[in-house]
Every structure is written in structure tokens, then in C-alpha cells.
Length: 224
Image (cartoon, rainbow, N blue to C red; front, side, top):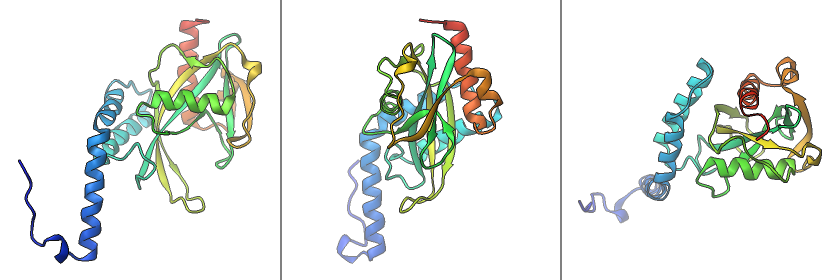
């Protein structure tokens, strides 16, 4: 049904009414252009099998935020946005690669923001290749997220505090010696055996959870 003009008309609206109307028009455009991509994100969440109550809470929050914010794939979304990570596994030795985040200064998987990608799998693979410089990275064993995490990013310079809705994948490499830290992305990188990750005090619980899932895949799939 065609929507007719409503009183007050545009010329009669206050400045705040005009701003709110423009805001709603932009969100409607996001909903139209990114609706299918957001439905894909929701489908990934529906297929998730959380490892614990913490991850289950992240999945529920991600589902709510994606449903409420049609621009969630854009960094213009005020409350936060979708990100994607990849955890590289050296299938020749059973180690994982973590990087020391340049701004947050914690050990994390490779990954980052979307750059016009509509599928977080594409983001995870691109970002992981850029940050690790590993030439042979591929999904291990398939391009499906295995872990989900919502975390708060503190205010930095002109970027306000916001949330990252992180879709996480496991990747494989047979060329671990090719890994090179990208100075623009990280302070350091480290290949770590699974058990070393679990014992480390400077690795967050959600990263340890992802590593346990990667270990389960490695023990099941071996060297594909």
C-alpha cells in the first residue's frame, strides 16, 4: 500500500523531526539493501551450538541486535557492528596463531571489520590473510562459524564505545614459518600449542573457548 504524506508536512516539521525522518529513511534503505545478508547472519546464529552459557548469551544478544539494527553490518551503526575472526591452526604440528592486538594489547585471533563483505566468512579469511601474511590459509574444514562472541570496545580517540558482534572461524595452514606480523595490525604474534593457550593468563576465556573448538576439529580432521 502506498504511504501518503502525513501532517505535519516536510516544510512544517521541526529540525528534530526532519533529522528523525531522515534517519528512518536511511535505516529503511539499509533494511532493503542488507535484508538478505542480515537474514543470513540470523541463520548462522540459529545453527549455532554454544559451548557454555556465556556463548549462549552472546548468541542471543547478537540475534537481538541484528534484528533491531538493519545497519549492523556497517561501522555507522552506533551500538556496534559485525566483525569476523579466524583462528589459524598449523595442521603439521597442532598449534594456533594468536596476535597481540595493537590497541587493546591482548592476545586475540586474526580478524577485524567487514569491508563491504556480506558474509562474515569472507571477512574472516581476508583479515586473517592480511594480518598473518600466511599465503595458504583456508577454512578448516568449511566456511562455517564455530564460535560467537559479543565484546565491548572502549572509546578510542573519536570512536565512541561500541560492541563487536564477532563471528569466528577456524582456518588451516601448512606453512607456519611464513607467518609475519603486520605492524599496522598487531604488536606481535605467537604460535602456541593448545595446552599453552589454556594455561596462559594473558589469553581471554572466549579465546580459550575458541581454541578448544579448534583442537576438537584438529583431532577429528587431522591434516586435510
